[in-house]
Amino acid sequence: MGIIRTVLFSLLAFCTLLPLPASAQVYRAINWLTVVPLNATDFEVIEGRGEGARGIWCAAADFAIYSMNAPRQARIYVKSPRGPSISGVGRVGVVFTTDAASLGTSPKQSYSVTVRTKGLGLPVHHAHQFCRDYFLDLDDGLFRRHRR
Image (tube, rainbow, N blue to C red; front, side, top):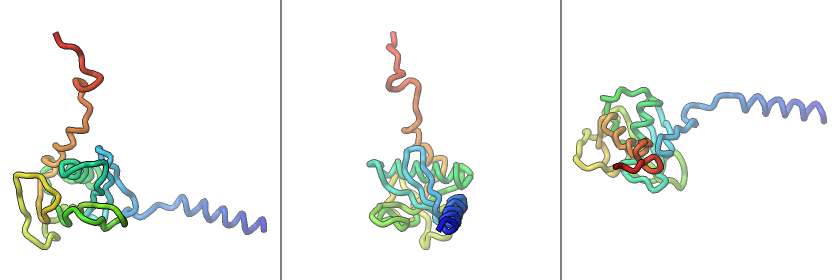
């Protein structure tokens, strides 16, 4: 009995040290939205915290820059518009891609920001500008001084 317990404990300890596949390692964007890598060019942003399209684009750009090392002039596209998540049951998500050829439709541009149009693309640096809402400005909030 003691040897079986030791072997099982050793096996369990060994398994916890094994690296997980990259697809299982989620990314937490600056606005705390979860981003799930799907393959080398596709990833899903999970909707949450009441974030709208700007927040979702922010998370997509944050992931593209800091996890995929995408150049800021690269474009990210909506591959699957806002809908049921493909990476988890009961969640809502948007699948983005950096590969325009995988869209199955021609890339689109728009003056409005949405996550409901397949093929809509933005430059990474443009989408990352939506993250500015989450940067702490020393002139905001508690740090605001009375001006004379």
